[in-house]
Amino acid sequence: NNIKDIKNIKELEIYIKESISCALKKQAKSTVLGEGNINSSIMFIGEAPGAEEDKLGKPFVGAAGQLLSKMLNSIDIDRKGIYISNILPWRPPNNRTPTNEEIIECLPFIQKIVEIISPKLIVLLGATASKAILNSNVSISNLRGKWHKYQSINYNKKVDCLVTYHPAFLLRSPNFKKQSWEDLKMLKKKIENEKL
Ligand code: URA
Image (cartoon, rainbow, N blue to C red):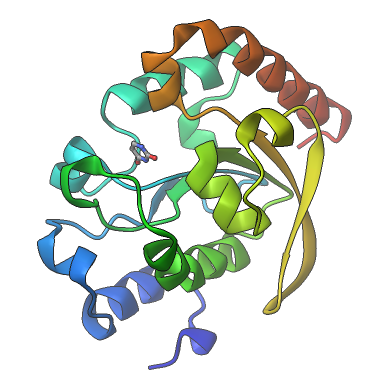
């Protein structure tokens, strides 16, 4: 029962459900790992399940998820074709922002998911995802607009990462949609150039 030996999402799900105990898990209804095409070369990573996601056990199914689907459709991506996950598999109480301690506690899970999916390209939605994956406290506005590399000690590939605003933030601050659209175009260009 060691995370090192886990080979697929189902095994990871069982491992987290059976072997992990933490405060967030106790108060959540669901353990939400991810959804979509496990063979995709493209992965999107958000923050944590919200109320709808906790209820249904699936990522990005509430209002933010609907906006994410629209954003994807605007660059001809069907969400079923990519893999979508979060940094935390559990909903923080009242959707509060996860603490750094919680992010670090859950980091081995998303690192494992990246290893399993082995994407060519990762899109990081919002500050929690970019902090955790890029190991950085730099703001979204400074991280967006360029490509970053993800690597970790258990993984010998370097993965191209793009940082952009979280759809939940865009719902509250629609004037950032212009920048978000620039990021989506940058993503689309890379997908076309590299035939991903
Ligand atoms: N926000 C996230 O970051 N993830 C979800 O799955 C839903 C909302």
